[in-house]
Length: 98
Image 1: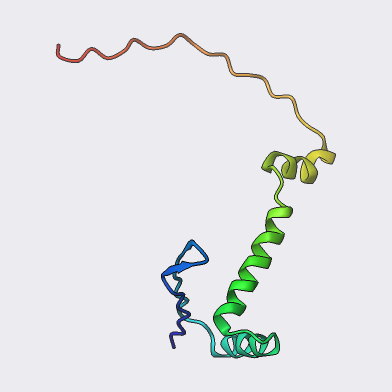
Image 2 (image 1 turned 60 degrees about the vertical axis):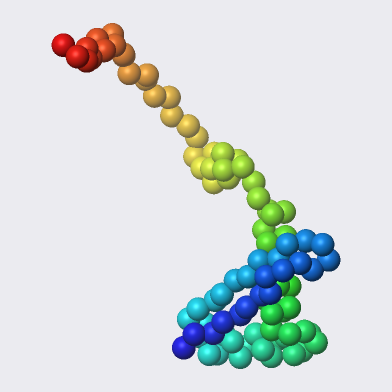
């Protein structure tokens, strides 16, 4: 079953709005969304927008640099010193047209 949540392509409060379609939404999930929207006095579309706004705002606050995440996870294990490989001279560039 395809469940479609359509946004209106146009302008609302002076800003461009985009549309999104969600396919293959489980019936039980759609029903939970409907109930949540009704409990909050919103349409299903407005409820989805609120869920997206709050989820994406919260994830932005937790964003850290990947190097910091790696150090937090593996830093306590210590590091290793690796020898840099010895490099030889560069090869001659190819000669085209001969």
